[in-house]
Length: 143
Image (cartoon, rainbow, N blue to C red; front, side):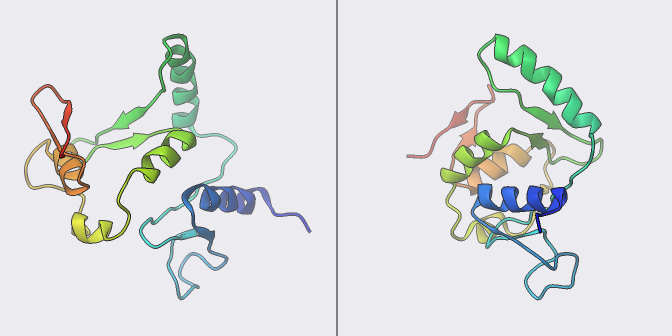
C-alpha cells in the first residue's frame, strides 16, 4: 500500500537530513517526539494544502531568481531575540554538510536564546565554530 502524502513528506525530509522517519512520533515512541529520528535535529514536519508563508517565499523566489540569488525568509517575533529563517531544502542540506554535528547540542547548551539583545546570530555562529559577526554583519571566520 502506498504511503499517505504526509508520511511521504516525513520520509523525504528524514532522507534529506540523514535521519529516519519516526513511525510513532507524538510521544508513543521511545526515541523522540519528533517526526524524524536524528541524533541532533528535532524536526516537526507539517504537511498541508497550503501555508501562507510558503506562498510568500515562492513569490520572493521569483524575484531572487531574477537576481541570481537564493530566497531566504527571516522571522523575528517581538520580545523574542532569536531569529528564525525559512530556507529551501537544497540550501539546508549544503549548510548541514558544513556544520560540526558531533557535540552540537553541547556547544549550544540546549538554549538558542541569548540574554543579550540581538546577539542570537553572533552566539550561534560563534558556538558552531563559524566565527563572530562584525558590526557590518559579515562573519569573521575562525581559522
